Length: 87
Image (cartoon, rainbow, N blue to C red; front, side, top):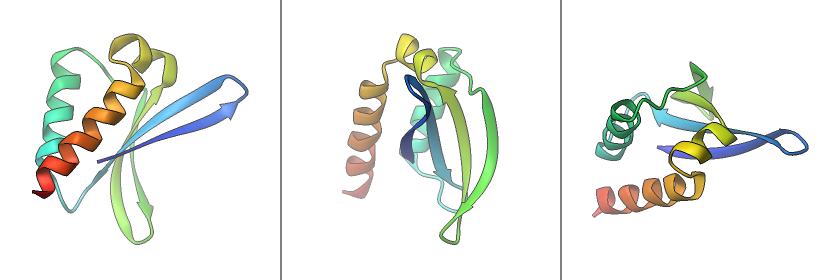
């Protein structure tokens, strides 16, 4: 799973969670389970190809995620889960 922040206008940001369609990982499942259990829903979900890799993309408003989980916390948690999954 990857997390990206995009600025669409001054002071207006969006958060993208990208999950590789071909390689479902334990961190992906853990994060998705948490989001679902806490009623945190993406504004949009869609598929996108980047550099030959297909991703499922979840699109969130920055303020929405910040109020519910904290963007810095989510980003750090994803990085921690990914590093544990690699061991």
